[in-house]
Image (cartoon, rainbow, N blue to C red):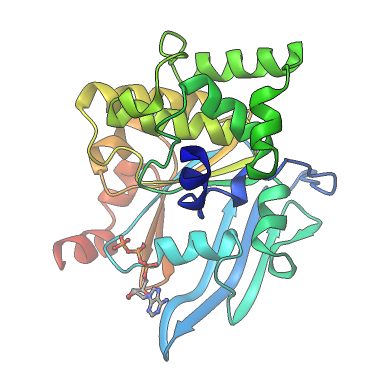
Length: 273
Ligand SMILES: Nc1ncnc2c1ncn2[C@@H]1O[C@H](COP(=O)(O)OP(=O)(O)OP(=O)(O)O)[C@@H](O)[C@H]1O
């Protein structure tokens, strides 16, 4: 019964627990994700203002920006939680995100990790990954059913990726904060998403956990595409990737961390805070 209660509290997780099928995803020579001229207003306030964002397949892109810059709203638009007033949003060349519901977008291969970890505390690490393969409808069947060897291999592979092989039989509730974050990333990976949206994963982590998270995200890029929203500049710098700076709902600058940090406009925005 506890499991049912836990599921009831995992409203945000159901979307990315949908089985991953993305037959229409066609990247070809283009980008994996295109946002063009996206605008959205809340009560007359433009939270996103003619935003253009182009993400290559296999990229790890860091999105930074001061509070209120529109980072969360941008993620909400990509996942279908918020509909823009104008603009277009394409996943590959054929999937129009603006015509899809949140579950359909999750099913098409876009997974989202919110800031706070929401794992099933009363289940083992292994069971959390197992459950993430099927979602709420199949909970009891999943726990009773025998896993196929390819499913076992997949769980084993993900346990290795997230560095929790030794903790596989521990209850998730006994994990450290950092380990819970990795487990939740692992639960996303069980769905084989093409694109992972990760929101401030290192908040509250120890330095060692941050280093490990950096390695994990870097290792996911390539096979997956990762968009990371992050406030911790040292962490972003350590990833040594392309950085997009958002400000007032638009892209203010793009480049390496060194390039954007020496950009006068960016300096003004951050110093002016
Ligand atoms: N549902 C909403 N209704 C009204 N205003 C909103 C809503 N969602 C966001 N906003 C406003 O839009 C702006 C952008 O918010 P958003 O949360 O996207 O910024 P952010 O860059 O994620 O900020 P933070 O770094 O603080 O999380 C803010 O001014 C916010 O108050």
